[in-house]
Length: 311
Ligand code: SF4
Image (cartoon, rainbow, N blue to C red; front, side, top):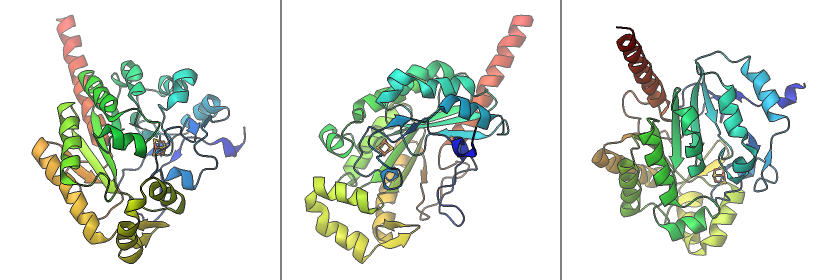
């Protein structure tokens, strides 16, 4: 099998000198491309024919080979550049097969917008795992324009509730905040409030970054944003690792709104690739600290149950 079929790789979004504060981890995408069609998607700028998703060639065999080279205890992210629970997964079940294949000595971090993830609660609840659900707005009509083929926000929140009930730690990804669309304090508070009610314990957030193809989609759907974007991005923003960031002043203001809401609703807080506000003490930006703690708790209840049974 050729090295080109290496599917589980170190997560290294920007190589050296990045603003990424994630712990060292691996990442794997069972699918190339994604059907959800989010206007702001970053992955479409570097993956050909992105919105026409397809399974990775010989995925399970190559992933098994990769896994044999990864030290137990490592964190494995599924996935960073496509949704592992997009519609194809309902028929192909590659994500589920991958979860079945990865021994319980590894930590799993799922990132998704889909409530299909609840199908795999049986697998996720018996191992160190954390599920990040992205919710950018509770406004269903805005979500339908911004993330046209992803499940509605209310379904994602219901998924948070079901996973939390199953003992699986849940993270809210309020990401991205798009200036003029979902960045007003009321919108932010509504998302954090609903996620907190559904059992989310941590929020990670960032402000939308411009790439040529994603900004073309956003401005074609929301042409009224053009003047605002010109000022925030092209006049006052900064270019970092090939992305155009909004002005620091705007980003700090928007991120602080999320921080305020997190404080009010009892979630820990971190930002993603912003370099502006520090994460809360003891938390990992991606929420993987929760997976490790949940696994410790599960192991200790299993020990207690075993010792009760034997006494
Ligand atoms: S769900 Fe994620 S990978 Fe899929 S289109 Fe949306 S932003 Fe891109």
